[in-house]
Image 1 (cartoon, one colour):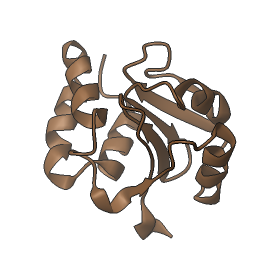
Image 2 (cartoon, rainbow, N blue to C red):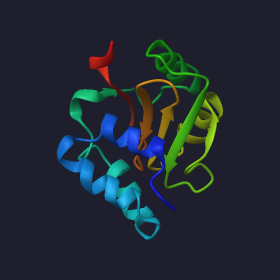
Image 3 (cartoon, one colour):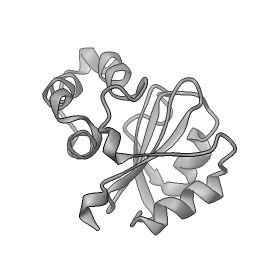
Image 4 (cartoon, rainbow, N blue to C red):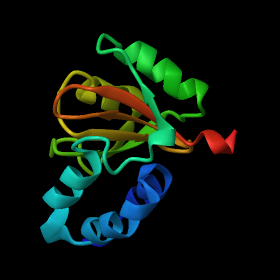
Amino acid sequence: MSLHPREEAAIRLFAHKDAQERLLSLAANEKRRADFIHDFLHDTRRLDRHRIIPLAPTSTVETIASELRKRGAGPRAFCISSNLALDRFEVPLVDALRAAVGSQTDTLVFAIGGLVAYHEDHEGERRLLHDRSAR
């Protein structure tokens, strides 16, 4: 499977500049899928820290969806996840959040049509990722 255009967009928007080429290479190689998800989503090391908005651990699906919509999220999302039931699926935003929030899996719910995403890692830490320069 080749690099999905939404994965490329998420990497270019949210990954630290120095990590982008490696992540793009991993994402394009099906045999390295687990490495890609780990390197991109396991923690915040490869994320552009200027795009991170921490969320409270008690944030609900409804409050997260509201925050995403305020920042331009559309009704659908593309998921990158260590949860195979979510990975590489395009689904309604709220359905993706219901599956991801509180799951403690390395997951990115990338809002289609926006420059914003929800990220939760394996430790349950929650954050929004937002390209604030595009306001």
